[in-house]
Image 1 (cartoon, rainbow over the protein chains, first blue to last red):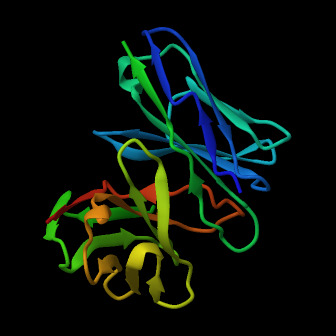
Image 2: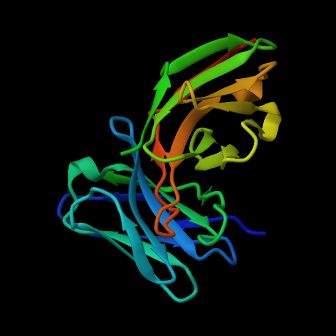
Length: 114
Length: 116
């Protein structure tokens, strides 16, 4: 069974640009969550999507947005990039229903802002 | 609100020695607790999870953790460290509410070094 796939693995942008990151969950998983990992703030929850609907949201500005498609694939977008947005962005998928199932993480997209 | 505190940002042990990584949580409702491991340039891999069944949870790679409600702790242990255990370990907590399960609260992480 293929794992969670995130593309691209590395990305370099400049301040003010926007970026879109992609996540393909494990087959059959309907929940996709996004996290930001930085040395200073650690791992922080961005948002969760389930069946194309945002189900939960962390404390990030509106420049961070996401969506989920009917095949459960998800994208997150960051507009008007700032230096502080440099981070490893991790996507995790899970069954999302019934008894709690573990979140399975991808290897992340490392975003560098110049 | 939920939170997780991992005591010790760096832990160093000798190969073959006991590994003990500490995690304390705060939660107003019964928590679900997890330990994840992260190797360089990789995502997080689930080691084990506690979801209100047995309080002693066995995970992969010889790790286990014990849920102690009275101490609000969920420490991770391994009897004998191996060089391949060198990585960063994260404790996380969540709760099941309104059907949402996708919001993990992580600790700051503990980097484990293993000396030969």
